[in-house]
Length: 73
Image 1 (cartoon, rainbow, N blue to C red):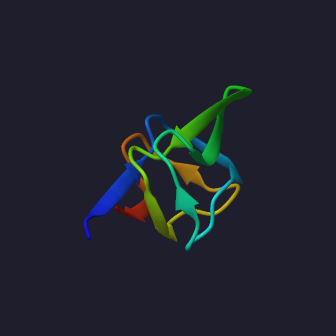
Image 2: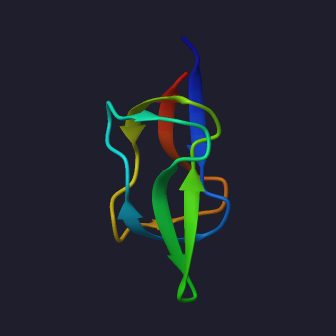
């Protein structure tokens, strides 16, 4: 079983977490939503798998390319 890192594409704040550890996701499913300059930016699963960990909290600021979640593929 491979581990896949999910990263933020931009610096933003975590607006809403959509998936929880143990959830099964398909490629393209939204894992969390970032907010930057009043825009909502979805962070999606790069492949199908099971969410192992969410590494951020709602309201937290993240940097570009920050590891925000881990999937087991």
